Length: 187
Image (cartoon, rainbow, N blue to C red; front, side):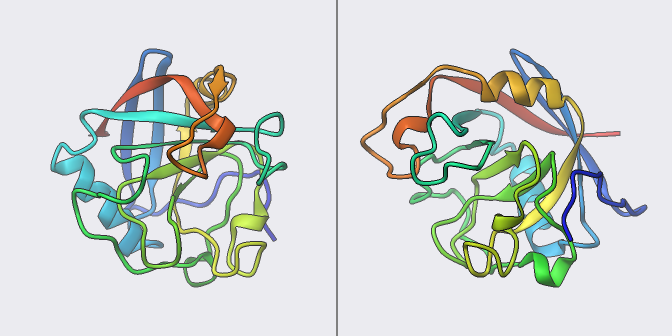
């Protein structure tokens, strides 16, 4: 059962640093446990595709009309999720990886299973409804977890939001001032 605890790491796992104007977020990427999804994320990192990424969505109870209990920030390079620079990957459900949407989990955003590409989100608090078999059927693919910088995640989450007409998932959760993020592998 999911909890708010840190998920176990292995020696093959990779760390990344996400530098923002609010500070840095350090995360572990679960290469062994979620090889397809972690590999996809690291491909974006290694090819420099996240050099001009942004956190552009802050979903929380006061603005999540269609997801009223979730708290997360979402970012990447294509808020529409329609024009990714690299083709989408197959879905890697939490049921297969043994990972779950605990506090600080990194997960891939998608429209439907098999459409995840460049966009990702960080969960604040436990969100078991995002796991396989939860509210969203096959769920979303967890591939990492924040190790340091949840204070930064919470600052971004608290940012002012506005209505967005271009994407139904942004609705009232679009950050008024998106937060630039540069993602690199770290030691």
